[in-house]
Length: 525
Image (cartoon, rainbow, N blue to C red; front, top):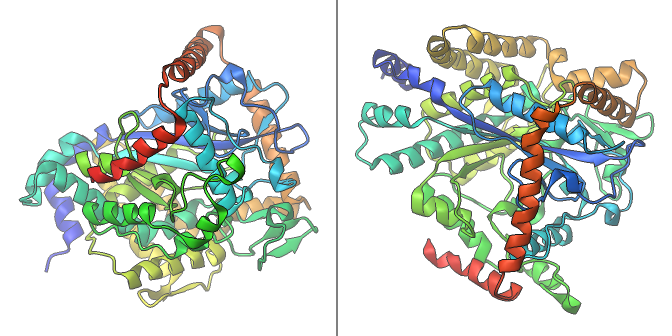
């Protein structure tokens, strides 16, 4: 039987479909903690000069009032998200006073848990729901876990690709059903292979001991206050990062759109005894939105999500069930402390190749056993990825890690050729070849560079991270926006504040009724 990936590549080239790849759409979401000049978590409110965190298009907050989130528009040009993200940093630094943005994924100098301020979004029903949802995360998982930062890479395959690819695959499904199921095939392969991205780009092998207070761990200690994994790549993606027992038992299916929606909504509707013990509104104060395994869809943590732009007040699963998958959100990217904005154009090119590889490679359904294997493989790479002797030993994968990784990169190099032809240069092949070098030279990985800097400088993780934050702050402060460049950001800040006030003034039902209406959408799908 002919290799399916090779056959698809040949078919795409034969009909010149690779030319459509220049129309891929991509956007970035980047989180960064605000800290004081001493490196402590900022206790100040979200700066008013940055606008409303509820309604601003590009600048909001994630879990904490101190956890900024930058959101770029969607662009076809790979450079545009990076330049827009750069301008967001330049503008923000002009409003921050002496505060800094933390440039590492793992936080530091963590005080008492209650010193982490939960994000606030005003008095409207939608703003209160966002705030109380975060209270639920606190009572369920604690606040420390919510201060971890990363970059989400949103990407969609162009429409003019899908219409032709639909024919090449001889599909009898409607075009949108075909698109949705193809995205789920991409997602399954991503889950099988995400450890490759974590090895190549993971940049969080160490953390402050203060982050681990009260938690059992097996990390080694350097200079008393620094905990690290000798061969680790990404603590952010480890059990010390986004992990909880309730979600560990979930079996969210990615074998079809229908199964995904059904299994996710089942978790949203299913009561969970430990959360029932917390209560929804003890003593008249909201502790969570409900007592189910998941309060809402976004509570389920995964390294990738199928997405569809939602309408006002619409639930994500309802949008997916009604109109299908529109794009995917890749959530596995650590902040790169060696780059001012945390991600590079070369990495975006690599991620594009990786996404298309996951789409074009065969992607059979994932059984519960394989799902567990994928988790085990990822955790091995997270904790031991730079070990030259690492073997993947799950029931599904029995191979030396570097052999496994090289096999995927070899096939990705073939996929990169499509991009090279479409763009008229060799940049995509070159970036894949550069990643191959990291298999031979693990010291070139970002995680190894972090540990090398710490060890050679006899620094703690805090000293390394603080120096990185100060260096980055100086970079942006030396390149402020001109008045003309800043005008659009100032205009959006003013517009967002007005929009928040309008939403608050237009509310005409109680918060309890708003919640009831929101959760009643389960019936739609």
